[in-house]
Image 1 (tube, rainbow, N blue to C red):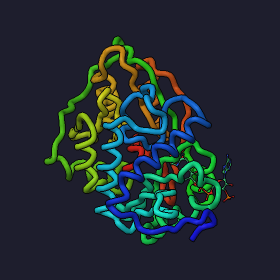
Image 2: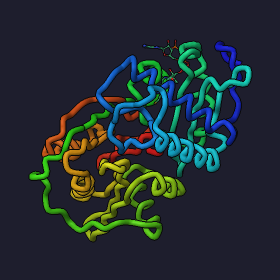
Image 3: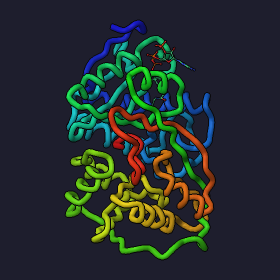
Image 4: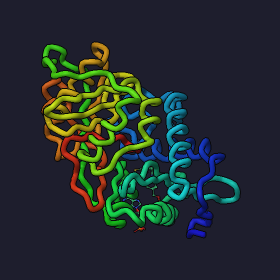
Length: 312
Ligand SMILES: CC(C)(COP(=O)(O)OP(=O)(O)OC[C@H]1O[C@@H](n2cnc3c(N)ncnc32)[C@H](O)[C@@H]1OP(=O)(O)O)[C@@H](O)C(=O)NCCC(=O)NCCS
């Protein structure tokens, strides 16, 4: 039992719906305090633009379903990485983590607003970190919430600020691109091999969920370099990985080119190691903001890689 009077126990499939609601409320609470610009933490489809929220503290139905689907998937692959805090039958906190090829990843982490600041978050994070005991490396996308940032740094993670580029694409800036094609299930080995080179671990079974929760998969498979990007409904890249800077740039441009004319697109989670993404976004007329962190343990920031908010 924690100081907050709640029990920590492994998450069950029946907890997923309540965990979705709890995380939406907790992230919205942090956003209210921290304000814009833009990137809500782990909201289910980071490729979608930040539309006004009809009911603050609730995801729209599509994002909510994506969150549940992704979490049910992680609970199935990594039951030992998913924990909840419960008090008198009510969910008070959640931490969802998983491992892929010696990389530990934190997908979701939240404590109900009324229960924050009393040590529940620390106990939940410790439980999730226990799942990654055999993994030297670890990564997660941190919200800007000072309590979250404090927890991650105290747990030994290096913090790398993330930039966010937003705006409507200047279509006169769109360049001619090298060869790209739409991808599919047959590309799984190629994607895994790109991931191993770009971030040190394959996504493996997560590609199924990524395909099901994004609008399009674009692949580059050239003698000089490989890469891929999952695109959100408005064209923003939800996850981008490449073996060369040229391929990464082409994938980002393809994402921006596919956005509807005048729509707000987002290049999210751009760490300082990815200046090429800054150059692409600025050339396309987007504005730069800073929001959140890439938190890493025993690995360098990937250089041709824009991580997924929760599957990284
Ligand atoms: C991040 C979160 C899960 C932590 O849960 P919690 O129960 O509040 O965490 P704890 O009480 O164990 O620890 C919070 C720490 O931050 C500190 N803290 C709280 N508010 C703070 C603030 N505004 N500035 C600096 N430190 C702060 C607390 O003192 C505590 O540190 P300590 O244990 O060394 O005293 C929770 O705050 C939350 O849900 N935040 C909103 C959602 C979010 O951003 N999640 C992270 C997604 S990446």
